[in-house]
View 1 (cartoon, one colour):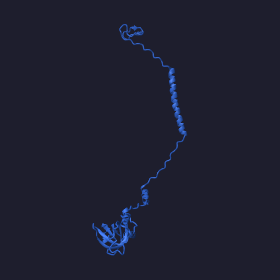
View 2 (cartoon, helix red, strand yellow; view 1 turned 45 degrees about the horizontal axis):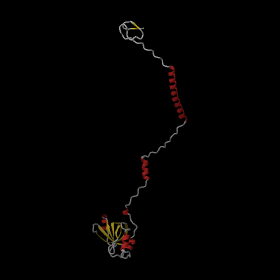
View 3 (tube, rainbow, N blue to C red; view 1 turned 120 degrees about the vertical axis):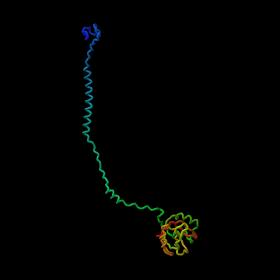
View 4 (cartoon, helix red, strand yellow; view 1 turned 30 degrees about the vertical axis):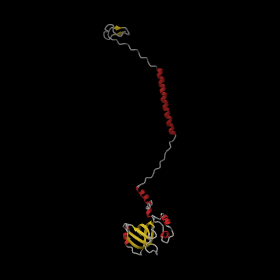
Length: 218
């Protein structure tokens, strides 16, 4: 029986409304069935197996790592160069040789070699002289001769006329001096010996002497 909480009248089980006052009656809730204990045990056992397997794998891995030694990598310390060491190394290095401009290199060509080809007494034809001059032109030579004249050049600067052969009447070479050679040229006199350096420019001809440029007095 269900007693109405409002008017106190007893009503039959399962009645939703009081037959006296119409009040809503509390319906008895069905009792919850207890969970199946056997299923719960199975779940707990499975979970325990899984956890136990994980713990066992971890232990086995730790034991293996403890048993097998790990190889040690040896590192060799590199010496650090300080300022004094760098300075000592720099002092022991040989100084670099100064570079020489190919135009300033002195050729071993001798005057007698050219005189045999380009003198008035030579039997070489003009075609032969022209062809051979390609191997001589632009070479820088160092010779010694006799001063015959010092004069102003056509394009400015000083020109030194030099006799190389004793039997030459005037000069065998016209040396066009560099601008910074004027002070040295002033001290020269006729018939004085002079050592000079110049670049072969033109072999002249039957009348004209050989011409050298960029002349320097030594």
